[in-house]
Image (cartoon, rainbow, N blue to C red; front, top):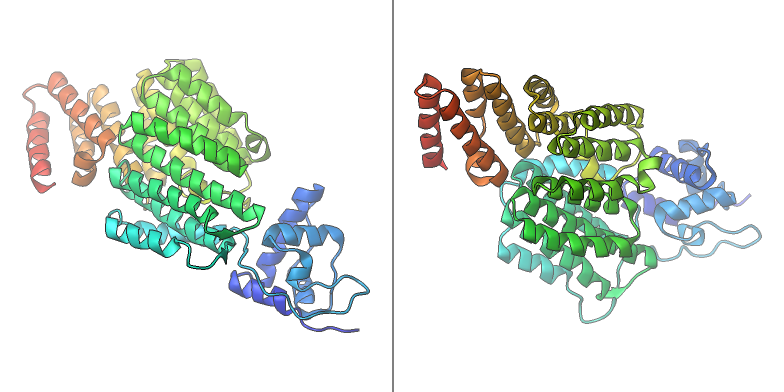
Length: 440
């Protein structure tokens, strides 16, 4: 039996960082999507494909491999039965979405994303992406590079939040993704992925505008993001955009519109396929119910969100934006927002402490928001000293540069002076905020 080594598959795996075991896992997942039953491949199966011992896998496996790689089986070096092997086809730059690499990049980017890139750097990046004098092939490698930039945007958002520079950089990268559409030839899969990238960047621009309380700009980004998401056909990014829309309307004081927008996200098929998406939709519904003064709805949707999260399989593949932020801490953060709005301050404080205990290190913006809300909950229960001590731990950068945090701390100071006039806590807070402004 001819066992000529499958050079094309081996090279594709090396280029895209797949071990035999990781490729087997990806193929098994794709087989399950196709057939409803998990595939039975392991590392030895892949080694059989690489060695040439298996030259033409069965039809379900071939289709799964094509879904994972974006390449036809013949381009991966497989040879139909009865056909002599030919020279390996030139490898196309068309890899699978490397989510694990992207997620790992979030933590690294968060440590270095101290400020948005300069206009000169953005111009250089745009020039590098511009088409050359001759047409070129646009592949999934180009998409991967954009997704790495998306990781950087997410890291900046979690570190700084709401900054105009983040919004502008995300919008510029959305345009860069669209410009790639016209810079060369590409498969439909690549074109759909470019639209999904553009929609992802637009949704991040939208979120930065929401977080910075620039709601008119947020609505413009939302409309563009929605159109791009439809062209991409990507249900995950559609969910993100409509879920952001629900949050936007909640912050604008429009709970009826918030519920309607969030319901669009919650009714997408992806929430039935993956309980984690269902959980996030319900968690944001919890915050909306709190803003609408619906106590029963708040309690019910929080319990449903918790249940869905516990049913979710942590091994499922999910987009990097979700992996970067949604967990038990975020669920508690949304419950904190809801119960604070309802005036149930002991329950709000409980969720604040649980959120702070579970927040991951890169969630700098979320920690500042949660700490500020904790201070409000403690002050409303009459504990001015503990509330002031909590508020004083918010970093000066967040207190002076993040629109939502700044406003909440201004409201905290006003409430502190109203409830404990002339107290040592008021004096301490006044001295602290004066020094804050000086350092900032």
